[in-house]
Picture (cartoon, rainbow, N blue to C red):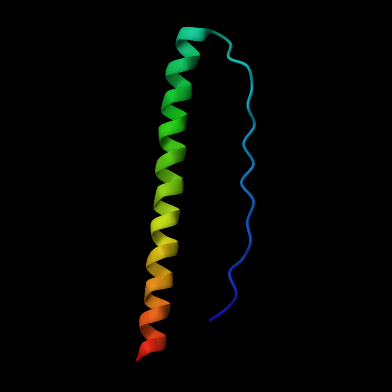
Length: 57
């Protein structure tokens, strides 16, 4: 199996334009980012498990 490719995630933090409107957008963006990260972690764990099972056989 090929070695995993190292990737960087860069997140820029900018000051909010308006506190009320921006906080809702920031919450929405945070949840979206958390879902993306969670899905990637799940994919990585699944691939690792498949690799281990393939080695055992």
